[in-house]
Length: 342
Image 1 (tube, rainbow, N blue to C red):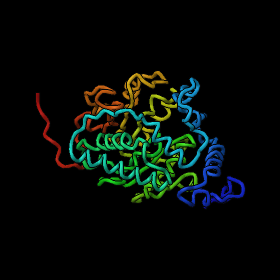
Image 2: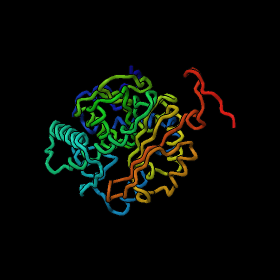
Image 3: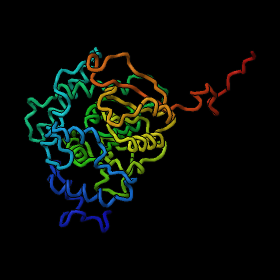
Image 4: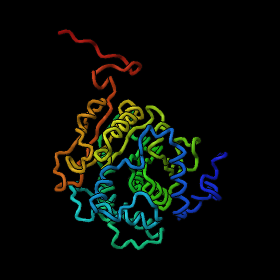
């Protein structure tokens, strides 16, 4: 399975590094860096480890000193990432019983995960994270779609601490495969920890290497570094989630990511984006205009005010099917409608 690369970290077998839920941070970090260096040919001339320009700018200004995206410190990193999501009041415009139940469920699962990690959940910003999760899940799933467009393969691009998995693995849905993607070591390794604390299996590229593949496996996160997007098959993904990430990439990296998204998405597949218009826009790119140039059309964007009604404007862009654009007839779908004479 591992061949000559079984010992990328001297003296420690790859499978042993991640054997326990609470794995040792030091060899895990060393292994991530070793894989990163090994994969130089796959990185498309980008320094993926330096791709989040907003973070670099903030650190250079002396802000957010606890935001460590390089060194990984284990469970404490999970606690810090909960705190990095704003702990001021999160606005919300969704009001119904099912939504409130989703918030409570997400909070309970996170509370249990922190306790399992040996952390005190008090003061960990659980309420805001749970609201954030419930909002994203509702916004991603509420639109009625044809059966062929139901979300079976989900990609979480720039997954943070892994929070999208909380409700996607807890609520009834059509999910077959969940793929989480990140480029920097601390979030990537925190995601492994968080997914395991939720009781999920992790099919990880760091362990499987070239044998990594996406299979419909319940309760499994397929985990992949950003520089190996090539391992996701063409037209295999129903929804890509990108929360607070696209505006913070460099311009070349953003174009590279959207090129990969267009390749990965099925015809009719969707891209869920949530961020702040004009805020954190490090790349100074007109994102909407770029998405249109890549063939996406905006399907849903609520008439809400950022930081008043919601924290980050959610919207859904779709890669439309040709028949949907031209009002055409799909061969094999039945009798074509009669032509009209004008």
